[in-house]
Length: 416
Image 1 (spheres, rainbow, N blue to C red):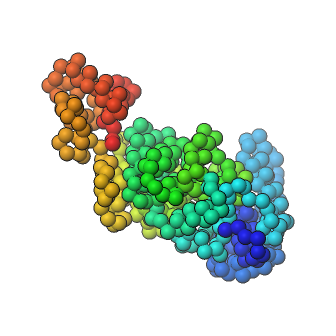
Image 2 (tube, rainbow, N blue to C red):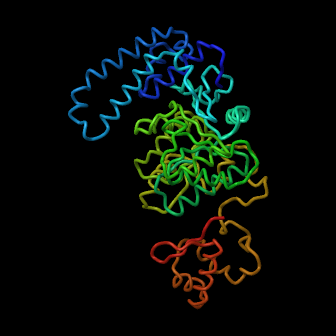
Image 3 (cartoon, helix red, strand yellow):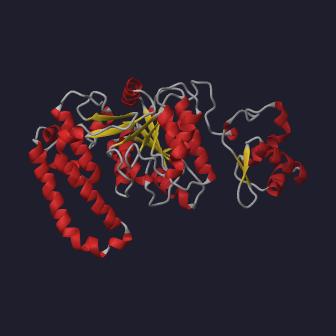
């Protein structure tokens, strides 16, 4: 946490962490050079600045002509801006950065602090500091950070453009995992990430940290902008964490770096949907390298968004149809200890689908949909009922939130 007392080692951590915000792989190179984090922190700022400065100068000199030639595509300009910010932080030094202002509700957790999450210490290139935000006072912020280090967490990842089924599954996993006392970790991106966070927030379970968002930009930067309301709600009821300094914008290279933090913090990683080259695969690959449990949500065969989870299932990932499967994989007790359903949906419930008696005549329709999406005509054929009667029930079930109408006129059973 932030402190007014001088602490050279802590100041060094924050300085190097800030430099690494603008230079990809800096900490990894330093660890490789000196043999470990502790060895890095035993060096003088002059020594470290000399190594980092030489790297910066060589990079700038070697890329200058190409940067100028390609300035119109945006990325070279970004690299130039990052280089300038890197050199400014390099010149400022540890003591200067130690006096830098911290946003309201913010804190910096350094490698040498007792609140630093133990799970991150096992990374080959751990962040030397974390920039953390929560909409609370300093005492509560410290308590939330401590709980993150003590909690069993599950990272839920997937595509930014999920199908309705994928978004629904991510939401249900987030909700049910939170109800069972696990911390839900994701990246606050659109799609699966946002659905998982919203599910955890919707659980309403009493907890100091409802969900944890790990960003690929500064923790004080709401990215993407469309998720600003969600960002604010996570601040209010959870935590936003980044290894990148305050104000650092999103860049493509920062997201894979973010993914390794998510994988390290989670005792398990669940991939919901993703194409063959999905960025979510990187998080799973990091999790496998770290020895974490990996689970994948199955989807419809042959679909582009099921390519990544199905590939991991073929490679030995555990099947995930509900929070119960995650609980079983982690071996932390009964998934239904809180009295809630398994999250597998009506098809996994007792014969009455867990519904009231007023839905008794709709049971054949629900049973038919349990095998897959159907149009009203197809469902009527399956149930041997008049089309008008089945259509009437489908309309009511849609209003009641038990089924959803998909493009093409097919109805899909919603998981509860």
